[in-house]
Image (cartoon, rainbow, N blue to C red; front, top):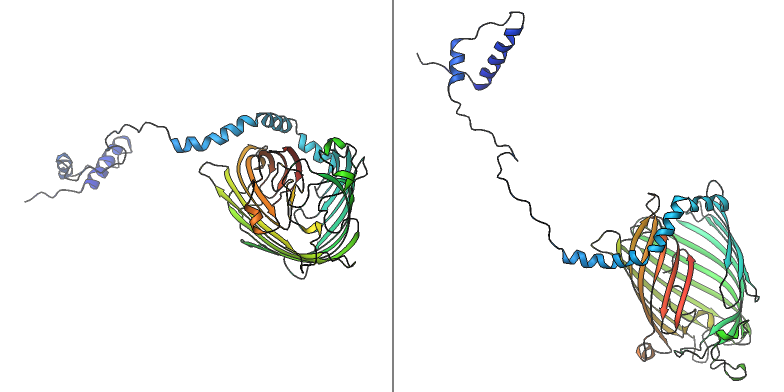
Length: 459
């Protein structure tokens, strides 16, 4: 009779049972003879494949030079070297909790109210002092009250109060009101469309503003915004007088201004209406790494004093954030165009609505209103690098290097003729994922160096 062979699993089970019976209570029974015979015969089942055991040994690939990534790292390496003093300052501030101690001094426990002293030690107008009080609850909401008072020893002053409230019956709507008054005794005036240095003089600018604004916001991404505003503005422009004449390289004879701005020597009242639309697809409002911002606006105004000054201003501003291959590196690109035109050929455009270049946002190496005329365009290329994280909070310091370009003119041909104004520089920004907290910028141009400090961001 042909012998029947047991499966392999049965053989293994039988063997374990026999082995256990040697040490047990004698309950195990002897296995049939056929079981031992089956276990002795060769197994015809193939050996299973085990990854990593049966594979041949392969020598790992030796690391080589990634030229592309190395070149991308070079700008960040130079920034880190240039910002070494900032790194030391930030480290010491974090170690000794300087920011937290200052917040404890100037804010309440809930961080919804703050009173900040303002000091401007270096200015051609003399030292300045002021105070900023802000209430915002909950944080980041339109429910806020902001008070500002600032003055300099030469008589310049700027006071304002702004209040905003959400409209509870409609989501995403907010109403805000603002009142402000200012006086600048030594504003620098370079002439309309003038690109020559050394011809500026001083003008005095006084103004009163009263604004009422309705804001619409769609919180979903892309964020859609809309603003409508009505305002009353009073303006007066006269010859100025500075406390330090060395800041005025070339004053026209007898104080006469070449091509003075519209409304010079008059006190004029301007009712104003404006509207703005925007699209925002940024992944965050601070430490932004990708997305676009588009803002367009229109403004209409005319004096009511019979001075024939009035016009319309249209503006479009676009910015995009491009993430680079390396982490925390972003390329920021910006461009814009503005036009302010009179309603009729016999009228002049009011000085305060003319597009201008220079200052903390456009052509940052030049003073405020360095280039001003009816038409203007501007562009910026900026490399941003997040180089220091503050105490594991996700926020910290961002270094940038930038180049700005732009021009103004009375017609389109003027915008692309002659020398192209430019500036370059670097900045340090304090940012977190929800907001851009502040910045210090150093701009260089063929006409000198300009340093600016500010809170919040400027598009």
